[in-house]
Length: 176
Image (cartoon, rainbow, N blue to C red; front, side):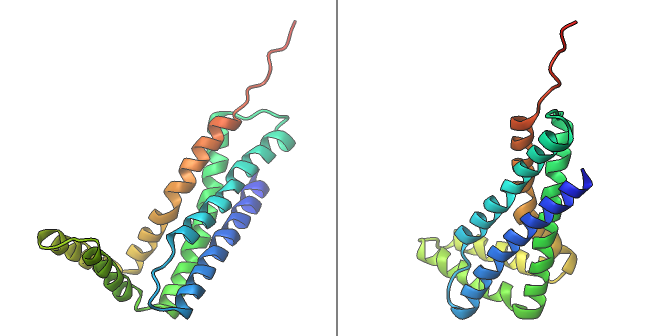
């Protein structure tokens, strides 16, 4: 079970970080562009297919076609955690080595988008305060880590739960 969790977790981690790196390179080559959520979430969904595949592989090849909901959820959650940790690690390298001004640029883009969407007055002020709070949080490495996990891990856990519900399989009753 450990080998499957580690293997599928790192495969998912490589995929999600590859999509992150592509998105970063696109943004790096065009600093005025907005980071692409489409690229990021596409990478996450493709990577998290390995949660399903890892659970299925364990059930079919190592557990005689049987797996409980709890066991499937555990495998899926651990695969998601490994992939998410890869994502967080790569983001920390990108942020601290290549984009230390990320929050300033992100805040400027978000404020510009808020103004273009028609926010004004109190709504715009609330948006500014929210972004100021995030910028403050980003001054702490622990908060950077936590916020980055919040970007990806919940999706992985949801996919782990859905996969576990789909793949759970009880041992067939034997006729006596």
